Image (cartoon, rainbow, N blue to C red; front, side, top):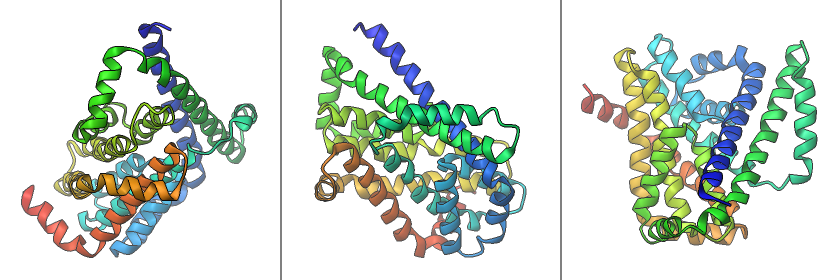
Length: 308
């Protein structure tokens, strides 16, 4: 298989993954659209409540970026304060880990039925079956893309330049963080970045610590969507985007020296490399969110002073 063919197929599978995320998100959003903004407006008066709402909504919508864009929009419209938005972003970081856990499931025997059932429901004129069909069809697309990434990982690794780059990533975790940040910023999906890393892990081409480094970088890269949504908005909307960036940067800085330790912890929790990486994402985001929760007020003041 030639390099051009591999790269072409890679982008095809990436498009399928992002399309699946979008379709699934659309279906889930249709099921919850009447409640989403109401939840954010009325149940975020305390950071703990905000974190719970952010986690639930992100798990439902399968996108922390979507929740953060909604949050920035509500802050820009004056419905939420900058302080209220911090609790939501803490929760959104937790909720997004559901996607990484989801794509590790082995449902290869059910992917085709999922696609067929979901596709047929898309023709329904009623909102409920259409929304369910969108969710199912989008989920099927995710697993098709993951299978595609898996099939391309080994042929891609046979090229000397790719082998050399993977060796550098395995040896220097800072390269992994940079790679995860850049890829996620470009494709606007930390889940896709982690999914690609899983395919290399499963083929033994990427070490677990390197995969964790890429996952950490993906958490920084995902902030670009909320930042773009804040451009042209009021000051508090921009502060929300800046806070999202700083929250993830501080988390990555704190965990970067702990990558080997985190790797050993998740190796005790799971056997499969992809599941280990998914668990590391859960641990990282939960620990960061709960550690930051008592410091929401000083953190908000820090961001306000830094970005006057």
